[in-house]
Each structure stands twice: as structure tokens, then as C-alpha cells.
Image 1 (cartoon, rainbow, N blue to C red):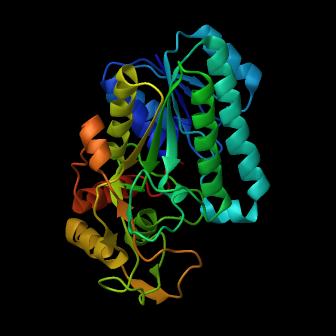
Image 2: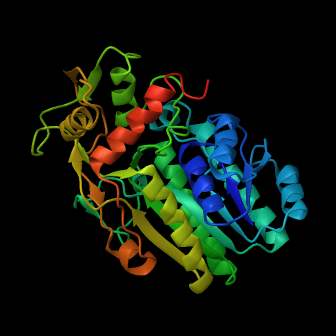
Length: 335
């Protein structure tokens, strides 16, 4: 049985669906502060399987201990945490308090229950701004904002804990830019307020929810002047978690993997791929650069491919089509 913290969120819900499809039993703990239990109900409809759900903050030690006592949990996937970069700059203490305390509570509960396998939802933000645009797992970690720093510190906590407990097996999965949605259009990304990321902004413009897209800077030293990122379909990303769980059955210690496609796409390339995939125009304006945006980066995926057998199979047009299908069917998200 797999415990999934934050399992009602964007990546968490897609991973829960794939876990159920693979025959795993799943327990979800989520306080629904940035997610919806409607996603879990739809997962049950899609899979015909039951999701055991607890509406709790992972930082609630007593509640977590009780859940571990009640169920025969053998592994954990840890998604729970605040995730907006801009908000983390405005409210750093809130981010450190929530993201670190929930992880520490989880590790305490796992220790009491003798659960020794953990997959952690990390981020490419832990690389900071290295000299190379191709991010490799062996790079020194750093961070540019409180959100990224919480991911970096949690990685360090998990590495330290694994060093102290030789039975603890940890996979640190560093995501690049998750986009897309399940092909059914029933589950997808439901950002609160103004989206922080490119694809939900594009799809909200496409369905008429927003007037136009703002492209932040067109004077970068890239092939078309706009920022380049490594976009990965959320279903590919979710399947990477299942591969990481399998790897923890065979390997000990701390495993670190990038999950991306290994190639970058510019903002304008994403816009054009979206128009080609959907036939829907996306009006945009060029806006000033945002502070802290790197011109270009993408994942080195060699290690994940060699050790996990991980290969992203969805194209950029697939990502655009699936994200639009979700937004079109759910213009107001899960509401």
C-alpha cells in the first residue's frame, strides 16, 4: 500500500491514477488547501477502484501516526507542500513552516511505523542558475527563492536521514516543467488565481477566460528571444514515480533523478505548438522580463533512462492538446 501526500493535487492526482492502474492500493493525505477532492472522485470513476482519503495537513503528527497505524503502508510518495515561487518570496516563513514541518512529521511517522521507502517530489529549482543549460544530477544545488530553498533543504534532510538510517531508501525526483492532463479530460491542473506557469495561462486565454498571454521578454540569447524550458507531460512524469518506487526495491541509499524530456522549447514554440495542436489562436503581447528568469535550461535525462528505464513519450503537441482538452471541459477547474 502506497501513502501519497498531496495526492489530490495536479501531479499527485495523476500519480494516484497510475498507481491504481498498476494494481497498487493507495491512501491519500491532502488538506485540500490547493487541490480538490473532486479529482479523487474522478480517479475512482476512471479506474473503478477506491481511493482511501484523509483530509489532513501532513504536519499534523497525531493524525499521520494514526493513519500509519491503521493501514499497512510500505512506501510513501511525498507531494504535499506549497509550490508558488512568487508567493514564497512574499511569504517565506509560511513556506518554510509548511514544507519543512510536514516533511519532518512524515519522516517521524514513517520511522515509528518502520516504513523505509520514500519518493520525494523535488524540483529543477534546486539547481539555481548553473553555468550549463543542461542540468545534470551531480551539479551543486542552490536556490533563487524560498520555494526552491525548501526543496533543497528537504533534499538535504532526506540525505542526512538516509545516512543515519541505512534501511531508509529515498528517491529524489527533480521535475522540470509539468504540463498536460489525463487524456480523459477529467483530471488536470487547476491553479488558484492567476496561473504561475505558461501552459495554464495559454489554455485560459484559449477558452476566453483571459484576454491575452503575456510573454515575459523576447530579447534573451535564445533561438527566438524567448525563454526555453523543458516541458514534460504530467502522465510521463507520474509514470516516473512508479519506476522510482520499483527502483527502491532494488537499490539502497539516496537515488537522484531528473524527470524531463531532455530537450527545451521556447515560449513562442509552445504557443505555436498549441495553435497547431488545437486550431485555436492565442493572442499574446511581449511584456518586460521577469526578475530571476533564466534564459534557457533543460534536463539531462541519461541517468533516469539508464537506471529507471524512464523515457518521456508524449510530444509537445500532445501536451498542448491534452491540457486544452482539460481546460475546455473544465473552464473553471474542479469548481
